[in-house]
Every structure is written in structure tokens, then in C-alpha cells.
Length: 275
Image 1 (cartoon, rainbow, N blue to C red):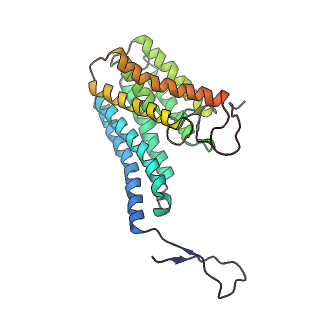
Image 2: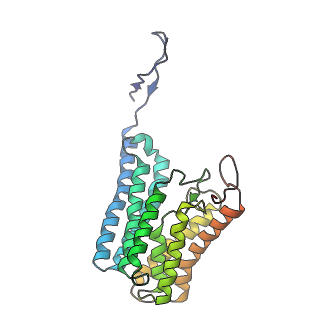
Image 3: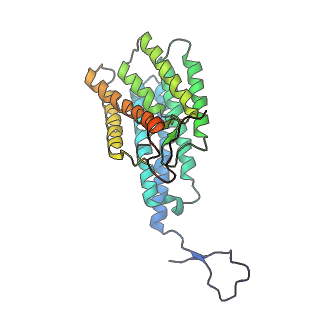
């Protein structure tokens, strides 16, 4: 394996001093890096197909594309860290790539879905959709997006989970009461995006990781199951399976924000809302 000399040497170094070298990544590492980045970028394709499905009045297809994008998003991060793709393909910033894809699949597509399929009271969908996109753009720009122990500050714009859950639980024809409930819940979540309420990252937070991942997998499985059954109505039990993981996440938010000290990493401290 060849090495590349470091052009920067200490002032006054003798000619015979050793030159620092940096070993380039091997071909296998580069190939792995491009595979991971390509898998991440496929999320944009899922987003495009999701938008087309919404335009074509096909909620089932749109939800399936959102689920596919979420599966890609859930797998690429751990694989990228395991293969250290930041070093093997340094010209691609995986963090920025992930943010770009997430804004499309986690915000744009589900918010269009909400608007198209009349999930909010009449004459509120356009205004609320614009506000959700606005608040999400601000959240994705936060420099303090995550804490030292890997919890999200503020609701992490996972509208691709919140909006499909509401749709699947309420059925394809939500009542006027359900529409007002949706409006209230979405408004609260949107307003929380610029707070320091702590929301769990299902993979990176070590505390309760096994339980959190189990609930997350159950959430995705229930979402897939109910999507496949569309447009047929379902019984109470599948709906509860879909709701409970979301309630678990809210419970963790309350615990981490107001009760627990920092759970991972250095400088443990209680982190409350900004005044």
C-alpha cells in the first residue's frame, strides 16, 4: 500500500527527519463508501416517487415509498459509521447528504400527503403545511441539533412517522374531530422544534437502546401492515400497536427533558427548556 507524504513539516526540521505519511483508503473501503452514499441518495428517488404517488392520488403507494425511505435512512448511518466512509470517500459529506434527503422524505413528502388527503380542517391545510415546512427548515439548520448524549433538541421533523400514523389510525376518511386533533398535535410538534425538549435518537442513544429499537421496529412493522391493508378499515389492536411506540417516545421525551440527567457522554447535567 502506497503512502502520500504530508507537505506540512515543522519549521526547522532537519533534512533527515521522518516525513509524516497518510495511507490512502484501499479500493474495498472506497467501494463500500460509495455504496453507502448511493444508498443514502436513493432516498431522494423514494421521495420523488412518493410525491408522484401523492399527485396521482395514491396514498398507499406514497406511504410505501415513505417507509422505504425510512428503512434506507435507518440502515445507512450505522453502516457508514462501521465502515468509516467519511475517510474512504472524503469528497462526499454524508452528514449534508443525509440532511438534504431527510428534508425531502421527512418533511416535504409527508406534508404534501397531509395536504392532499385532507387530514386537517378545511382552509387550514395550506397555512399549516407552509408552517411545518418553515419550522422544519429552521430545525434542520440548528447548530445544536443533538446533545452530547445524542438526544435531539426539539422535535426532529419526523413528519414521515407522525403524519402516516395519524392517517392510518384514523382511516382514509377522518372525521371533523380527528382533523382538529391532527391540527392541534401538528402545531404543538412544530412549535417544539425550536425548544430544547429532548427526543430520542433510536440508534445513537445508548440508554434503553434495545427497548427503543424494539418499539421503533414495531412501529415501522405496524405502519407497513396497515398500509398494505389500505383502504380497508382495521380493528383496534393494530391501531394500538401503531400508537404505543409513539407514546413511548413521548414518555422518553418527558423523562429526559425534565427528570433525568445526561445519560451518555461527559459533563452530565440536566438540560431544560431555554428561558
